[in-house]
Image 1 (cartoon, rainbow, N blue to C red):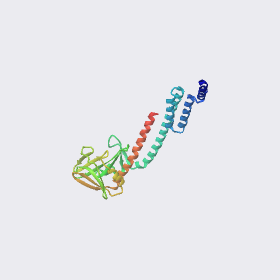
Image 2: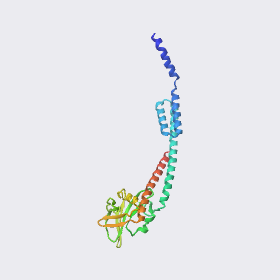
Image 3: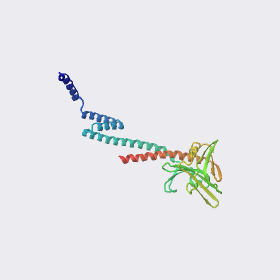
Image 4: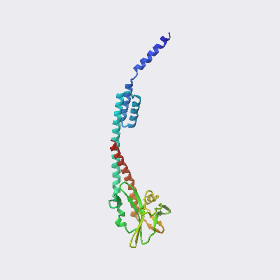
Length: 264
């Protein structure tokens, strides 16, 4: 009596199970879905599908091998897409940089690495004057230096730039023979202070954003000296500051491109 009640139910369950999709068919569906996602450029979603396939159907060696081949193809496609994107961005930045670079002269005469000298601050035109100089290299590193020229030492180690009640003061830079150095020739004296690695304390940004204002500079040390910034010096700092951002972005894009090419 009991057997006659439960046997038809058991047979029905077996019949339903036998009519459902096989493991191979389910894995094939996931593989097909992953291919469609890959073709539409949805690489991350395609990878998720393939990871699930390889985890849930790891005993199906043929389907797992197909999934691995598709993963490799996705990696190749993604790198090609990244390269195309990087190439387009590099072209955009190079075009953006082109007019900016017209303000600078590339020179290999001042150390092991080339530097970019603003045309308005050529050394031959700035040797015997007191001013703030812009320093830029092809990688986009940018800083300023204060350059004092006179007939007596002031031993300055700091500058203050100000206008109309607003001012910014740099950090103090101790005399070390490099970032703060001085020399003399006859009765003429020179003092040069480099404000690197943020030692300008916002002076660069203040000058760049107020280049159209009559900015004044106080050279601060054992003595003091004051100047009104020349228009072309303000423009040199503004141009160098702006150009530094584009150069850094371009250098970063090229570095990323080299990485993608190495990994192909």
